[in-house]
Length: 109
Image (cartoon, rainbow, N blue to C red; front, side, top):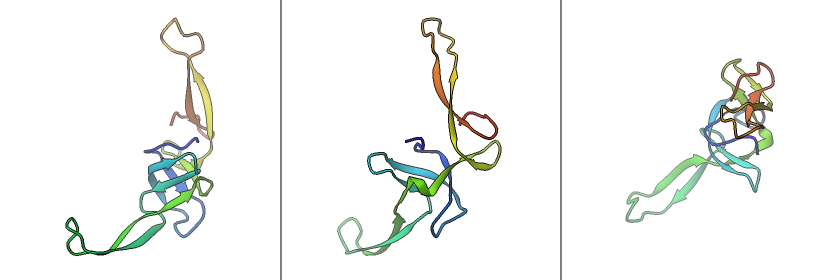
């Protein structure tokens, strides 16, 4: 999966369409993400020793990764990802490292 925890994403479909938010958790096996402030769900909880009052708790639900695009901070637009090989300073490694880059402006993400 090309989206990682801590990335900024642009929501392209659903009730939160057009929102820019941060990824809190990634589930790569299910292709789903938890994004901050998106797909808010309400859960009823009964009183316990930890939560003596109980009540209704609102928290983020998961959304499918096809409903978001990675957001590039340098060009301020949603973008796709391309991978670029960056030469390493270590002479033992010939290939270098792969880095995620913006397709529009070429900046590293």
